[in-house]
Image (cartoon, rainbow, N blue to C red; front, side, top):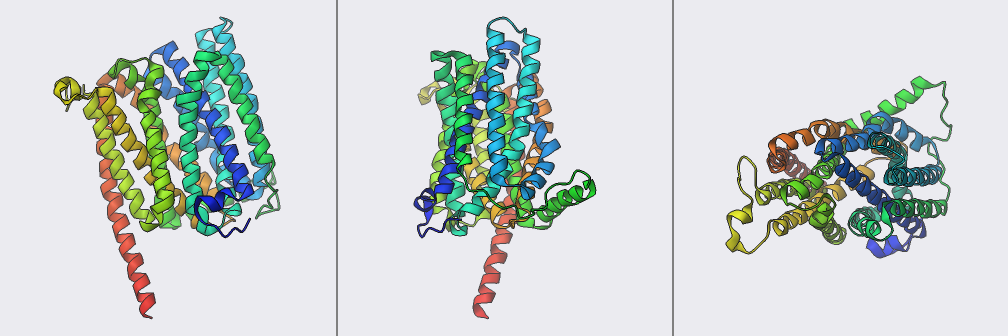
Length: 450
């Protein structure tokens, strides 16, 4: 770990190792988000169904349930650098295959059925690769960053993660489609994965905390280590609740990705690819919130900040249903009902998307910091794997039926129902956070007196 005296963003960015993994994250996530946007738009154009988009999201989520426990064990027992290099290298290959499949579809070589199956398979493989990449990346940060810089480091990662979503989905992918076409855009994504591979190659080789390796014959030992990771997470209440908070944001992200193209096309009367132009303020909100939390977040207890974020997401989702109209509660769209307010429905949707983005970051950053701070080096990879398993296990059931419900009951109605559920979760979480903060202050007061 490089020991620098500066704190905050200046300190972490002057850390050469952090800079390398940060740039790798920017390139890799930009390519990932751009490719995912292109795949969703292609499927919307072929099928015109939110349920089919939900199937793609399911293919993306399923590997986390199947592989992340094993991936966490591997991350704890192998060099993180090796995993990062191989993960990005394999993403280069999947990016090339995506470009070939897209070219075959546009050229008439592949039919719609083959294309859909190929997309599902490639999404599944790409997500499987990510199950090893993400915990290795998360476990590397505490190894190269001082503990007092973890909050700004995670804030910067969240900020650039959001920035890469904006850059990939809202700027580069639509611009690429208009200039070099979808096939050319997939080739650019493959080149970006190659750049990320080069950056992680520059990281110093770390020594695994458990250096004895993974024996294929020792299945029972591997299983015991997976169980150990789950037990560590469950028995540390603050960590487990933070993992549930991260699972909530992951689930909401999958649901919004499922509903966004249909919301743009069927609610706002736009084309499916215009979903990014309507919902880009969510990315800006996450970016803005990440900057503010990185600078001032230490003034608010992390448990309380995440609880406020959950409540804010509920408000934002209810606002989307209100602005979009067509639900069982709100009837016609808000500004069709009130044209004198001089705001369009799309404008109001963008405002509520901004709120949702800000509140999502207010959940993610403190929750991720709690997980990293309170997990030791020997088990951190498996705890992060628990995060991805839990997030996707919780996210898969609603993804399976949310698109179908939206097709039947309308997207605003489903959005309103989700906001009610999130509001109830916010009340429970806020009660826990307040009691936790009070207990921590009482302990601190007793220690000061003694």
